[in-house]
Image 1 (cartoon, rainbow, N blue to C red):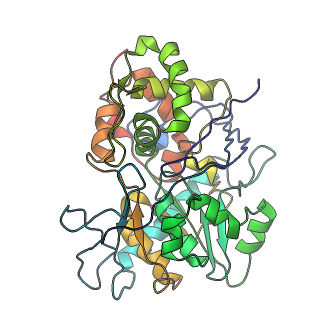
Image 2: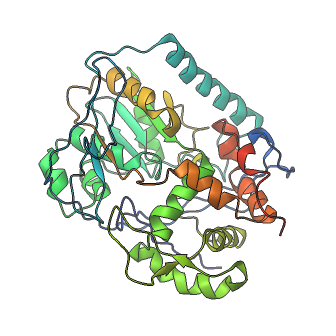
Length: 395
């Protein structure tokens, strides 16, 4: 069957890359429970195909301020009086952030980061993913390598990717004004100076002495899915709108579409609608079941960055990103070079609050299938899905 190509958007417009992952992990099926380690996963092959696109970023037109105490973690102030966006409604939401004047990692942080690495190594071995096979190989497609500063990053979309693309572009020599005024997307700018490495090139860099600081940033897979739904579907992203009619007609039994949401303060057209979360989830699940493509914004992170085959120095998490980011920035000594920003953080209702509402609208069968799809993510990165297990409907 010919794979359906899903054109994806990074940040607020078309930012995609052609990516093929043929990763079929044969894991015995078990029933989901309240613990992430016992949640089942999909037996379907995981593939991604993405295509380069464009994203409009506007020039700074307003002052942005933050209020922080020296020596504390990276701070971002969200009060309307203190923070203004650097662009017009409907464009990328860009906020200033402040690095601490002085910083050193706490023993608790070092212990937590090492515990994550140990946990991942143990789970990879348990799942038989710690050695490459014919079907499970390093996926180097979305890695960025900065040799000057000894950094290697696997870019997981919907996990602080916009923020760290900003950082890596600054490290590559772009100025803040260039990034704000360019008509090219952050990914397009990055790939002009960070060519996509082959698996062999990635391994060679990882084995260098001294070793680079390599990292990926993970996010609870269900929250990442909700975030992607809000940003790409509910907001009516132009690329994804092409799919809406077929989703409406195919999943009428799951209810009507829902009113489209505003995008960073820009109101949607009158009477415009988007697929409901239940319709969107069923479409994703059916795509997976038929062996079609998984969009890079909701593909399992364990497939996208293959962390069982890449020995990352730091396994950062969105949930603890302020401390984790400080560790990366200060350990690699780039604190005097980057001008940190927080980009495209959701406004209004938090993703966590929205996730409870949306995930609890799903049927038990849909929730079990999602837990099946993201079982390895939940297991490797030690995320708990119990909050969402007992609230879905019975149908």
